[in-house]
Image 1 (spheres, rainbow, N blue to C red):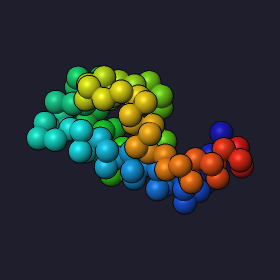
Image 2 (image 1 turned 45 degrees about the vertical axis):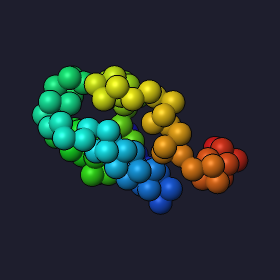
Image 3 (image 1 turned 180 degrees about the vertical axis):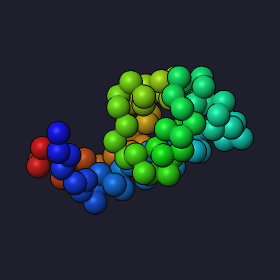
Length: 91
């Protein structure tokens, strides 16, 4: 399976998502949150640094639960209104 390259918007969204996770994690360790979510610390590291900008839904859901952040809050923080409109039109 060939993956299409990510658009600049998708990369930026991944960076915003990673920053939000780092902020929500606060002083807690990456290992602690990763274990609570059932993912590896390396997976969390890649997501937080934007190297994995399109994590699977179940990974996002597990991280949200471990960080006690709602999926709605994550989505709202990752999509700016103007970006969302542009993407929704092109999707």
